[in-house]
Length: 249
Image 1 (cartoon, helix red, strand yellow):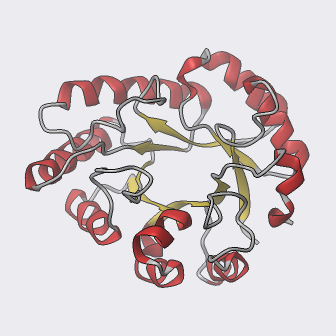
Image 2: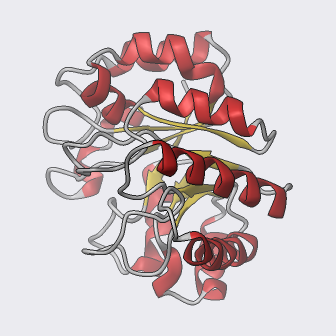
């Protein structure tokens, strides 16, 4: 079975933020991710991670406030300075926290100019932090209307054009299902580009068990393909987090 991580921005919300890494460890997770860690001092989060003995697999850019805010700036024409400012801040947090990946969010945009802006900004980020692995993630436009990177073929084109060794695909099976309706086929076409995987059930975006996505088959396919990264639960628990984590057993 894959190594499972817990998204602490969505799971274990019964606990204060700095207690969630230990809660994830006690539940059997092997790592954690935090979408936007910028509301807490980095050194306190690092201490919480060290107490739990868990690695931080991923953080997102942009900071700081996700609620009702912008969905990234990497593909926004004219937003290059804001993107660079936010990326540098995310990079500082990643270095303090030991984050393995930074997910670079594209933002709400469309058209050829947005594509070119996205490619330029990703090339700049990859060159600015050559030792820091970066990811991009196709996100369905039902959950995030107008999001630029809404297609796996587009993501592949962008990755090939940038051609940076530290830039890879973030494969979210929930988004793959909503975009293509075919998680297994989408993985077959694009999984070789993936450095990080996320999962949630459909419908409802709750625990990745039951529903329309065959997760036992998907996890078996990851093993068969030799996927070596983490699989992170990025979902809204139907009840208390600990009551619904049988899917990692």
